[in-house]
Amino acid sequence: MIVLLPGDAPPDALGPLPGGVELAVLDREAPAATEFCVLDPRLRDRFAAVLPELTGLKVVQTLNAGVDWVPKLPDGVTLCNSGTVHDGPVAEWIVAVLLATNKELPRYLDRQRAGEWDAAGNTAHAAGPGSADLAEQHVLVIGHGSIGRALERRLVPFGTRVTGVALHPRDGVHGPDELPDLLPQADAVVLLAPATDRTRGMVDAAFLDRMRPGALLVNAARGALVDTGALLDALRAGRVRAALDATDPEPLPAGHPLWSAPGALITPHVAGSSAHWRGRAYRMVGEQIRRHAAGEPLAHVRRHGY
Picture 1 (cartoon, one colour):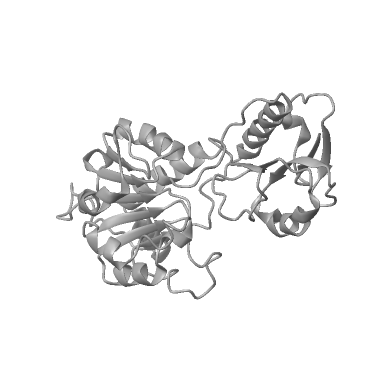
Picture 2 (picture 1 turned 30 degrees about the vertical axis):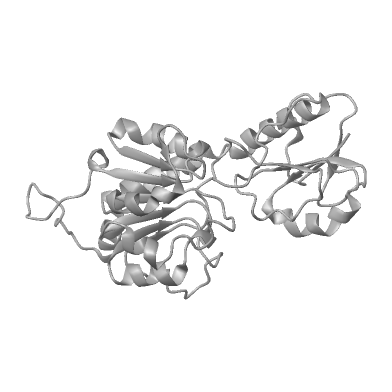
């Protein structure tokens, strides 16, 4: 069985592989008999170009949670995502921006750079309102899958109330039809849904108008979920705040109005990055290769919806 890997893959992290497994490098070659291909976004164009030649392909395994960037695959090819590899880092990024915005750290950083001592938020010495506490807040998670569960586990010890929404409602998780009633109740709305025909542009003017005044929109998913023009209008009007790790367009070009929009905190799609993610990802890939070689069901098979 031929397995195609990115050129920078650490083969040792795969662990022991069954006899007969041959590793090849997608950056340089694409044997027609390739059965299992490991893919990341930077190789999308290369993969799309050689896909017609991969007549033996049976499995495409991505190193990412989102798979909207993967080219359309032939019938019979199974697509798997990275499963829980990025759950911890993404959940930690969300907790970090919730804390940073609640404690007004971006504002204080601006004051530091300006050399200004601004104690307006110090309720012990001033009449300011003080910062928000996670213990008093309600966080609405749209796309309550494995990352949403990891986020909830981290927020509950703070005393935060977490409400989940998913395409398929279940015990403790609401369906999309309940969003209009849930949005006005939340102090923060976290986007973790994939980009699908159903979710693209879901955060439009009507969605933003339903949010509680001053609430925080957190996008740790895909920029396409948000109507950028509507978000800019809401930010400029002071109706909402935003913490964005994904934007539309992406990368966000220099001079784009989102960079300077009031109440916006932006990071360059790094929520899932950590010093240890690559090792975790390729250990997962090794386990998937062993499952496939043994004829066992694969984990993390990608299905539509959220």
